Image (cartoon, rainbow, N blue to C red; front, side, top):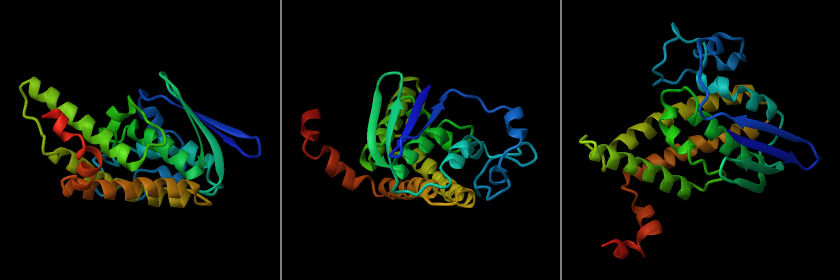
Length: 229
């Protein structure tokens, strides 16, 4: 369980606990939810789920209480955001959109969405308020560790990151659709800008992968590569 707490400047607060091992059941899917969570509402073009089997979008269902809580908030409202994970607690005074981006990213990655939850492994090492550079490093690193383990099991590894490129190509489509859902569910822009952040980052990361991580190579390793030879 990872607990988020938003403390506002007027003294009020809001808390949310993320069970990273939660299950999405038929009962949850068929329950009464906000209209914007319907699977058919701005359904992602690459969604593998069928409206014959599912009534709701799993990610949208998981996000709805968060979106509702922050619907009337603006992006640059300040809050003290604390994140209590099993191993440590993180605290940062920041804009709401930054705290919400961190929270919603964790919720989506641990949802039952077959596309987004391909990033579920990162939730086991959740890093709140991560910079784009940190996220790229962690994501590529986790993927390469997986390939190394596959190789040790006698399977064909993907050290060229082709599979990761496919994942992020899919995420570009999914995040764009989620932005449309969240825009419809929000009065002001805190939720929307947090969603736009995910959308923008997925595009930037995909471009970085297609460019062979050239700029990231310089930033992360140029002064240290010789030490590993």
